[in-house]
Length: 312
Image 1 (tube, one colour):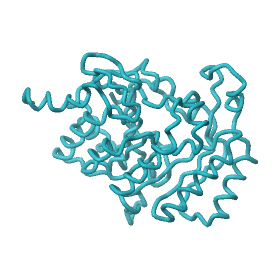
Image 2: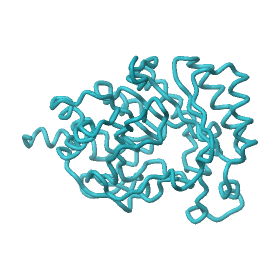
Image 3: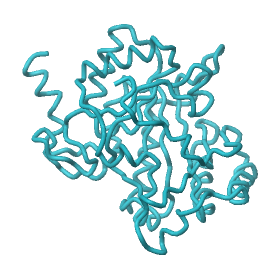
Image 4: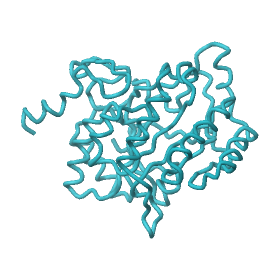
């Protein structure tokens, strides 16, 4: 890599504005942004992952690469061990490219970039290198939905499938749980951009694995069923059957990480079957057909992968 190429590649971490927080941290100087990360590329796990939607994991698994840090930092984060930027291994962009190829060699259906927003410049460079070295499976961009269209645009030649959350429809809820009152409007614009880039879903005719498209995840939070229904109604009204909606019941209460205060008490328990059924019934009444539902006891800590630097 030439000096000029290296400088160009790192420029986006100067006065960083990659995410909607636009904190302007000088990440190249080891300053950490709201994401809790500098420009040092920190990865916590790279392994086959079986717990995504069926069209992503399939039988072989999704090649999930978990990045340390997160710009959103929800108070109830299931991956709090890594989202708060206290764990991970520093690797080079060349090593990240090798990891992508190693996951393909292990039979991964795709490369699943988990919480990637604050490392997009690294990821684009690594993905381009991997493609030139024989990577031929889709890239899945698995994020909180709190994204800037300008950052997403840089992924146009890289990402095939977008897998965003749509966490909140209320600015008040977004402010309370993620200190991001702008989340609802930011997520709407972001998903519009994702749909513009990826288009309607397409699947491998043999394996059923998604090759292009958008799947929006809606994690139903306890005592927030009406908000989940609002999100689903919005998504179905705007995109119809041109996207998939994944309605998730797997919220796992982790009381030790929650702030004190009665306003967070609803997060100290699991979602009830009655609450989830209410959301599913409303979804069916809307006429939604392209959706994923969860069955059985999925709100267990065992569904949270071990962050042990596997594959890094």
